[in-house]
Image: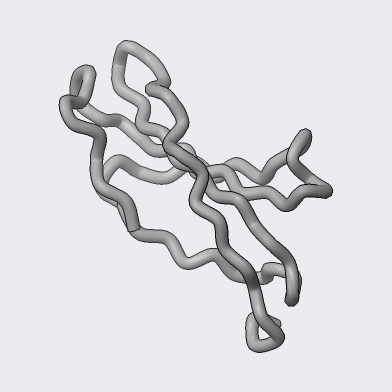
Length: 79
């Protein structure tokens, strides 16, 4: 879950969410999400791995800055 940036630099048209591990940091998975979606459940992650997650908003002007990194760890139950 994330909050829209404030102040937004225009009307938000979409979000990008990227997530990666220390092994995939140079080639992260990036998901494009509609502007009305501020919640995402990531699935099919690898067990016992640290993930880093960032999000940014897009407006008609372009991409905003990436958020601070949110760190998460998957346990055995994420299979």
